[in-house]
Amino acid sequence: MGIIGSVLGGLGGKVVDAWSARGERKHTEKVRTLEIEELRHKTKMEMAMKSQEMDNSWELEQIKNSGWKDEFVLLLLSIPMVLSFIPYTVQYVEDGFVALGKTPDWYQWLILSVFAAIYGIRVWRRK
Image 1: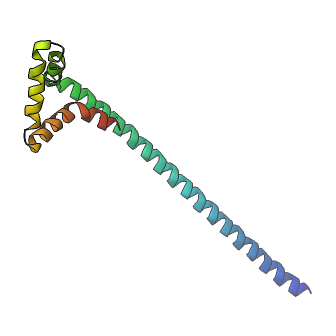
Image 2: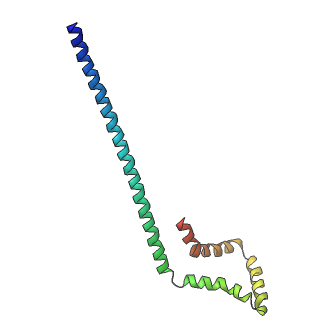
């Protein structure tokens, strides 16, 4: 029984060593996976921060470069509203919108695009 016990003891030790090595490999793989996930998360967060910084920078540049065009467009948009409250100019406002309605579609879309580019892009960039 001494030889069988010795063989089983030696074999059992090797099985235990192999099982331990397998466990260590699995643990190492799990740690690596967690490290990779943490790195991905950190990278995403950094990209989001940089994106926000770029958006803020873009907004500041737009404010600096807006100059007179925003005020001019606002003034143009306000004229019909103001004239609508002056009784003898109401007909001019109505006639103007009728005439504008008769312009080609491409021209109406062009006007809409210009106003959207000046005012609408700020809302779009924030989303």
